[in-house]
Length: 392
Ligand code: A3P
Ligand code: MG
Image 1: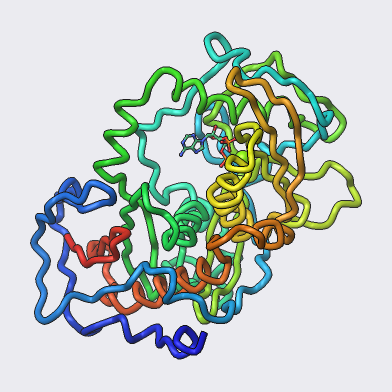
Image 2: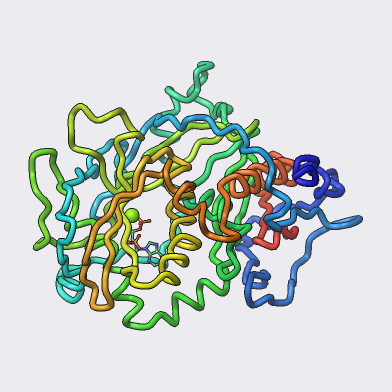
């Protein structure tokens, strides 16, 4: 433990002043095709300007086993909705209401895949656009110090999607999927956005029909358990349209990093006496039915890590899980309070630890603050999960 306690988060950074940055060409698109990403480590092929050793941040989990960092209770400061055509609205019109299913509901998740499914176009890269729209629509609220006409400085160190932070949290344990993040500093705030890796692009291109269908199942489960209005019931005969989304915008602080991020919320408790957001929110998930001790162990090690990270960040208190068989039938439903997950995994040998996730994220954000120094919207730094330097 001492070894971990004494770990200085700065000791893995080298040469923080080095100029690993250059302006992106006015017309220059990203050059990330050449990125290295796990597991297929490709040749790095880029033109960063560096002198001295590369700044580096280890992803080894042993380095992050210190005390849990300060993580302030996330506060919802707004929300927005994306409609069936992916249009932005600065309100909660797409909010849905959780309707508790039976314990053994036998929901057929395959129903409607062929004829009642409108799939969002995954080729449209929205980057941070919707969050930036929300910031512009709410700038009078965010710019307390007047002068809302010209762009004001935000009281945040980072603006990003919750999903990007989830990937950071799970990085010390993720051995398969890599990531690529781009960051730019604007008026002191760091904006972090994801860039698709070459491996992810290939994976998407080569998806099997079975995999495509299984991606629908999660949304179909949402349709079985969510109503559009407080007093209505779910409509399993309707169309599943994955353009639609309700997103919460939350404010919190991780150690000395002031964060503003947004994440999609599946639904809320419909009881009018339920606590205020985000405490009334419910995350819905599906997972393969657990029949053997090995399957239970894998569920604890891999699924619960992702579920915990995703919901812990915005302060969503519970996950409702539908366990499905190979035919896509939900055979039972269970609720997982986020605060109980760390106890659930206690008996797993060598399992993931929340503190490692949060400390890695915290150190990564400190690292980014040191790397993305130049305050210029055309200066973009990119990092992959080997946390090596790369600029364009
Ligand atoms: P499951 O969570 O039941 O797998 P989310 O749970 O984050 O709200 O996502 C809703 C559903 O979107 C998922 O349901 C899954 O069906 C689909 N989905 C989200 N991210 C995905 C990914 N990276 N790959 C495949 N499917 C994904
Ligand atoms: Mg969900």
